[in-house]
Length: 48
Image (cartoon, rainbow, N blue to C red; front, side):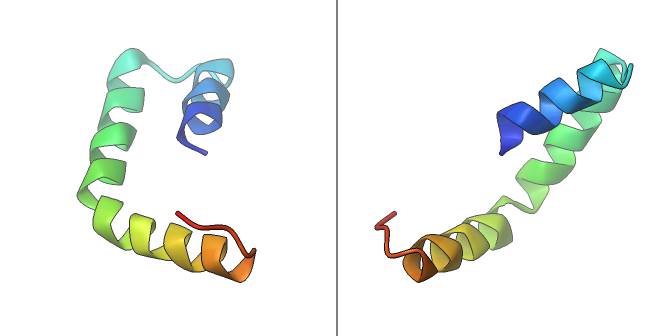
């Protein structure tokens, strides 16, 4: 998930700017990501 992604980046020595850029990229792709997440949740029998 997003929290573990940022934590992993920090552990790998990413700067705050790099993390911010990655989060911005993530936000730009968020609609597609949410759709994918919904499909995964549906497949797992959870509502979301």
